[in-house]
Length: 436
Ligand code: ADP
Ligand code: MG
Image (cartoon, rainbow, N blue to C red):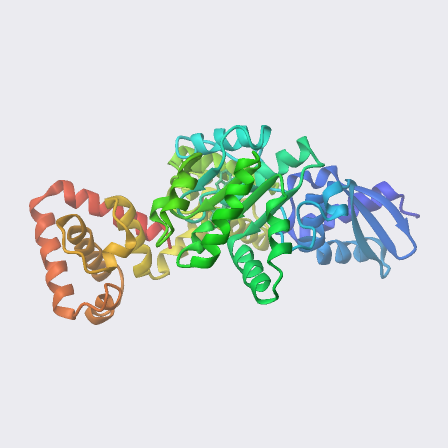
């Protein structure tokens, strides 16, 4: 019996969903089989971001499924129904100019808001709707894995949809530095400046890498001023606030602070649950509420890890051929308890909880505001890791083993006498274990 295109397509999609559930997204139901031409099947996506995702992450899955569905040696091509004009003219995103490729999942629709990120989200939406006018620059910062890149890309998606003719430049800070250094080396500063100072929107992710790069800072300062004076939008992200970027020139700190600086903080349980629901829907994974709550309560510090847990759970359920349940989640994620706690995780979380800098905890300062959390780190490192006293000392500027010993004894004693400190340390220890 001959297979009609629509059943062929249904078979193919079903096969991809079954064999490669990790790459499947909710929007796959919008894909169409545009053409079957000889040995090539052309799959049509809604936009360039989707077709790029398919090209980069799903080619093997689709080719395999197409071959299984047809029984022939076919290949698969991906096209976008709405070609992004910028992608064709080389004007905008991902034009082969070392620009970062937009992830189709990183849209405002897929961004969950809560008390931890509401301001950053609202500002990002305003910037996307009126680039260059609302908040300029827009500076999003926060610890790793909490949605900075997602938010930056969501602005790019929306701004591009609103005005496809605008010139965007979305790059990592490293790319800016590399381009600048190459330009200096090849005497091509003029072209470099033209390229960076004639865009409508300049988006630079992880701008903290400008730290200690004096010449790049100087160049960026002038890029910033030129764009800002002509009301072009500048969008930046970093893992800390402008004033915390080590050795960032004061004039740049004040430029960055002159627009809107918004924190993306660690999400509360409700928000983490909402994010998990959103991610599960996006990946077409069915997860009951009790399992959602369990996963969200186990992983607190980083949304990327939360998502990783969901993928792991899905893979486990596919392998065992059973649906995802609370029991399966407990079994799968329970093994997290076997992984060792890392001292840098302890330091990071203690720094956050005590509102001090990681560098100060590891440095030489001796004020009480720093020594208490430093001693707490040493105490927790002794309690939660198998490291020796010397090794622990090594994480704190090479302090010797007696210092570590005294510090952790002092904290043991302090928690006997101070129940508030004891419960604070309990909460931190739980967070550290969850962050594995
Ligand atoms: P960062 O750039 O801050 O390190 P990312 O933007 O790469 O973090 O986010 C890590 C992962 O967490 C991504 O998959 C992203 O989609 C997801 N994520 C982070 N915050 C949210 C949120 N508020 N809603 C939905 N997904 C989120
Ligand atoms: Mg990022």
